[in-house]
Length: 383
Ligand SMILES: CC(C)(COP(=O)(O)OP(=O)(O)OC[C@H]1O[C@@H](n2cnc3c(N)ncnc32)[C@H](O)[C@@H]1OP(=O)(O)O)[C@@H](O)C(=O)NCCC(=O)NCCS
Image 1: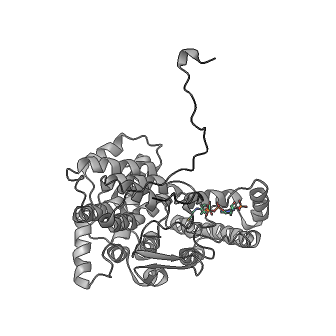
Image 2: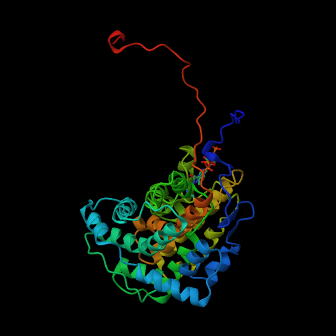
Image 3: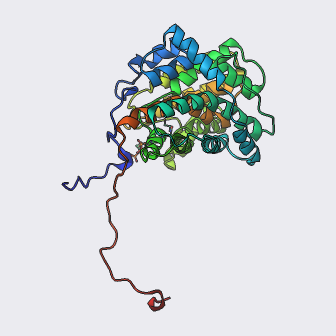
C-alpha cells in the first residue's frame, strides 16, 4: 500500500470515518436532522421514546409499534440488583457521571450473553440500556445525596419517570414535556468524541457495554457534555448581566474558554441552542432567580457574539440547557448525566449501524522521536 499522507488532522477535524444514515449536522446552515426529520419539528411534535425508535429503526414508529415499544421500555426500566449493589459501594463524593460509567461496566458483568456480537444481540442490549440508563442516572444522584433510589414507575412516560425517580414526586405535565424535549435534542449528533470513543472500542468487536462505558467517560469531559454543568458554574460566578464585561476581560486576558460556546462543526447557531434558549426564556418569566441567570446568559452571549465574530463562535447545545434544567429543580451535577441518558439512544444506534461493516479503527502517529540507536545495558548507564 502506498504511504498515506503525512498530514495530521488535529482532533481528526474534517475526517470522515464511516457512512451513516442516522443524523446529519449541517454546520454552516445550522440544521440538524435525525433520519431526515428536522430537530425543531421533532422537538415540537415527537417524544423521546419515538425519537429513540426513529434513530434505531430508521422510521417513525406506527401507533402499534409505538405501543409495543413503550411496553418493552417499561418492562426493562428496573436495573439489575447487582448493579445497584455496586453503586451502593461507591463513595458519595463520586460524580454521577463516574457512577453511571461504573454502572454500565458492572452491568456488562451481569449479562451472560454480553459476548454475543451480532446486530440482533446488540439490539436487545440497546433496548435494555436505553430503558435503564435513566434509572441508573436517577439512582446515581440519589445515592450521591445519601438518599435511597426510587423504583421506576412504568405507568409514566420516560421523561416523567426520570423526574419522578430523581425527586420522588410525580412531575407536572409541563416539566415532563420540557425534559422530554431536552432528551429529544440530545439523542444523537453525528460522531462527536463520545460516539467516536464508543465506535473505536466497539470496532475491536468487544461487548457493547465496554463501548458505552468508554462513551460515557468521554462525554463527561468539559470540552464535550461536561460543558453544560460548567456553564452554570460560570454564570453563577458572574452573578448578573452587569458583571459580564469584567468577566469577558478576564476570559480574554487569560485566554480562557467560555463554556457552552463554539463547536467543531457549527459555524453558526446550534439549532438545539435556539430550542433551549426559547424554553429558558419562558421559564425565566416565571422565576426571578432563573430570570437573573437567563439575563446574565443573554448578556454573555451578546458579548461573545461581538468578541468572537471572526472565530464564528456561537452558543452550542450546552449554553442554555442548564438554565432549563435548573428551572426544573435539577442540580448542576445531573446536567451531563441527562445528556448521557438521552445520547444512549444515539450511541447504541450508531454502534449497531457500524457493526455489519465493521473495520477496526487504527490510525497512526507521525513519528518524531529518535532514529535507531544503540542500547546501553543498565550497569553501564551513567547516573
Ligand atoms: C467545542 C470545542 C471543544 C470545539 O473545539 P475545536 O473545534 O477544537 O476548536 P478550538 O478549541 O481549536 O478553537 C478554535 C479557536 O476558537 C477559540 N475558541 C473555541 N471555543 C471557544 C470558547 N468556548 N471560548 C473562547 N474561545 C474559544 C479557541 O481558543 C481557538 O482560538 P485560536 O485559533 O485563537 O487559538 C470548543 O469550541 C470549546 O472548547 N468550547 C467550550 C466547551 C463547550 O462548550 N463544549 C461543548 C461542545 S457541544
